[in-house]
Amino acid sequence: MTSNSASRRSWRRLRIKNASAIIQPVRLFSPFFWSRSRVSEISAKKCLGASFLSVGVAFAAGLAVHQLGHGGIPLASAVLALTLLVLPFFLLGLTDFDTRLQRWLVDKHLRRWGLMATFVVPYLVYGWGTGTFSLEALSTLAAFVFLPAILLASSKRASPNWWDGAALLAIWLPFDLRWLEHIWEWPDGLGSYGINAVLAVDLAVILFVCVRGWSGVGYRFRFRRADLSIICMNFLLFAAVAIPLGLVIGFIELHLRWPDLAGSLGSFIGIFGFVALPEELLFRGLIQNSLEKVWGRNRRTLLLAALMFGAAHLNNPPAPSWEYFLLASIAGIFYGRAYVQSGGLMAPAALHALVDTVWRAFFR
Image (cartoon, rainbow, N blue to C red):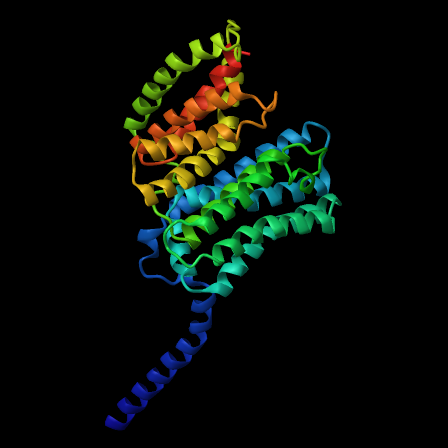
């Protein structure tokens, strides 16, 4: 009896040992799925919601392209590639995926470079399916992805430094100067700006939040009730300054008309996702945030970030436009105030989108 019990215990220990030997490699390569606290850190419902939202956005874009007469394998591959790019955009903003990813990447250099390499996969799918694959486009995309990662890897200090600034420029300049437009040339370059905006946001959040571990960036798609009053108050204050000043210097002209509400709503959503959010992530979440880490949260850091924001608009037509620089800098002050008051990017991005939408609707 005792001998049989001992044999069963030995057999049970052997099975557990063998099972552990099998599971251990899976744990190594699938760390996201083996944490006991995974449910508390990353809500399964939010992840599923982010996935459905990503598919929905890509499908809607594909439907719009289909209505222009495009279809078949090129359209399917483009939709799949867009889904792969939009998925981290929503996962990072709707869940705590960034926190989990940050822990997974700590002191794991091979994982970091492997993660950077995944940014090339959407283009491989896109280029193969649309027949537009080229080594030049692939090289441009690889340089855009790996150069800021290399620059950040050269930084040895936890606090913001010049390597961080160089990495920011390596992300922003190619996007802002449209150096990436030729990568997504099907169909006829439609949507290339939006795709590059999503790509730049994905890259910036992963590198600075997940790899560098910066706090306070505020990349969360979360609106609070207080955010609405923050948006409205800063919009009214900006309008009280910018509209009279813009009329006096001749930068804007009043164009009163009954706005197309549906068109204005669509314009607001497009500006929010592809213009306001990327710019607010850069100038408020990364630049203003980094200045505050060095010099503290004060008027100097707010003004300096606003002036950088204004300077980035000097190349907008008619270029160079000092009137554009002046008004954009003033706008940057109020966007920065909204960022500080709300503690996140949603309020300044919504304020930014509201300003641009009203400008298009009532001024020219």
